[in-house]
View 1 (tube, rainbow, N blue to C red):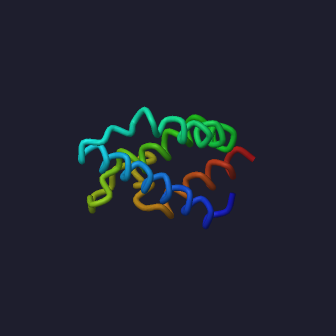
View 2 (view 1 turned 120 degrees about the vertical axis):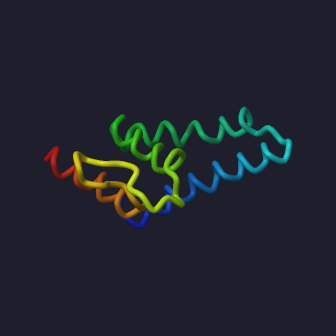
Length: 99
């Protein structure tokens, strides 16, 4: 997977999650309905990424505060994953270290 596709995939995941959240806030519960559309994505990403990679992707996509100017994740004393480029760099560096 190249960087452009990775970024597009992350952005689409975020949009999908935000749409389900917005519907829920409007009184429409799509959580169980959307699960059938999410399952193929979960299967595919389990083939493409390690469990640790998926943890970082989920943290970046769902838990990270995108409005914070302060670093939220570190490798030792070094801030990591501050933006989508940083997440990509973490994925690439892990692959390089494993080779």
